Image 1 (cartoon, rainbow, N blue to C red):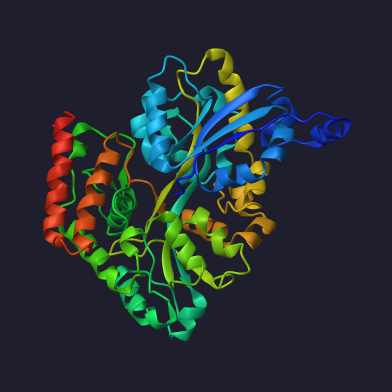
Image 2: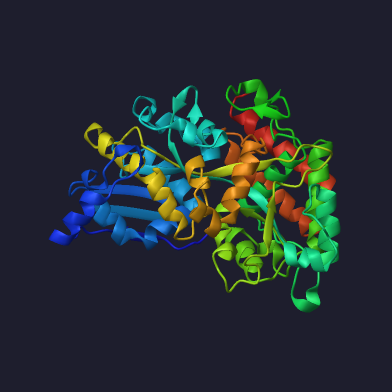
Length: 449
């Protein structure tokens, strides 16, 4: 994720031509854009992910449509997290709308307004089930999905064909075998790109891969092939890292190093996307929203040569891709007189027409079925169709990063311990054992048991 902090102040433009434009501008759900701001200012704090980058590109048009001033505070992931927590302590919120990553609801739910009474105006059936379920906690709708998307697995079909590989990998064993065949440093092509940077990037990698090995990171209750995150109790908070699945994941990640590009120990989201788009690796894990880096760029060697599969599985587990991404919520400390305005803007920004517009500007995500089935969207964003198919097949879930307040602590521990391991400073067995110990200590300190 970018470390650039950008603040955009959008100014209302007046004129007769504009009036004609506004009369014709309408969005899904019957909300007319010209009625939303009516000369007022809306304040958002969001993350530097594709949907909000798309908003930056079209801010002039959005401002004309909304008829007012829009202030976007676009921050890196960790900075956004910090600022949202600080804002929750204020007597009065500095922001009308905040962006929430799906795993953060456990930490944020005490200061997010219940939108259930207002959300009745939205057609929930148009949203992929996993996307809508991800914003409902304790029976309350705490946000509306705008860019929930899974981390999926991308591979170069042309390079696979040249190497005599006829299909994408379904298992981690196949990933390692394919990476070995495709790794060609002499031609500056690595077998695979992935997030191996210390801290959050690698910590998330471990949790999401652990899910592909069929294991949740804490003792959640099993629910078929998945786990129940709707009713997490203290007894469920015991960490489940030091076990056969956790050790297998650690060894898998260590095995990827040999087929990774130079600088892998510092590779995070933006870098793996850039390297794959530039032809520097044959396979990559990628959040589906970033697939436009090659699917929408004819200059990319990967353009037109990429196919997608869910996370390859380990230990015979079913294929599961981790759902993450962003929703829009309203802080409980927002003054009551501003809450209706904030809701109208959320309803507008998450509507079908706006979501289609985002795909025109690099955001290849569609939590709405109606957008996923739009021919123009599918043409410019092939990953949208793949994700919709994975969702329909039940191959997307969010339990891999359960919505508990200590999630970031877990990520931090794993991101540190596993980096020691892939750097060769610690054995896999020691890494998982120490991770289990440190996370157990955090849960004990929090008073769960």
